[in-house]
Image (cartoon, rainbow, N blue to C red):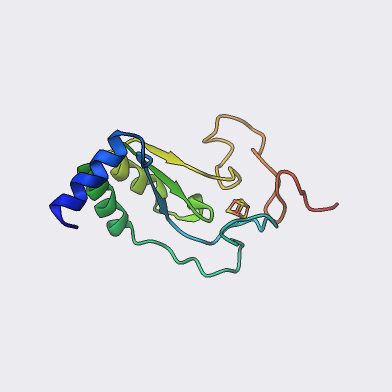
Length: 130
Ligand code: SF4
């Protein structure tokens, strides 16, 4: 990216013409299969996982270009076993927001004995019939 283009982008972010949050699609597979899913994610779709080193490089670039935060989404990002370490590295560059359906988060880690959402195979608003 040329210096002039980078400056125009920084100006657009600082004037709120462009969002300051840069989104990274960490992967496209998901443990759920919601009918309304914009990315058409599901358990059997190809993961198309974004390389972790590449994500950290993009976070560094984003910070230099004037972005103010990162968003990580998918698919279900927490299906990646490297996500906790990856989030720490991303957060060294910019504040990070993660979109998750919550189901892969272990109840103990969330400080509760109850699962946060419907079991795998269903969704919060369309649970699997019993
Ligand atoms: S939980 Fe989200 S990513 Fe997964 S299928 Fe549903 S809408 Fe798509």
